[in-house]
Image (cartoon, one colour):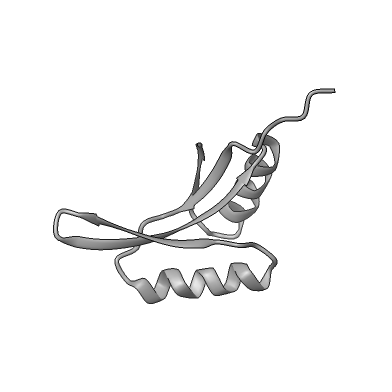
Length: 79
């Protein structure tokens, strides 16, 4: 039986307010997830987002649907 490798991550939408990303991170931590807070600079603006995973593809897709259903915008990306 082939075991699928964990090569998929979830990334939340970009937000310009760090506290908003931190608040979502704490909420997801309480639910048993381990989101990492990331920052990137677009032009002169710092934006923040969360990264969850890595997961196998099926788990990533299931979580993405669960989050979107709850109003949490996420994208699934391959590592």
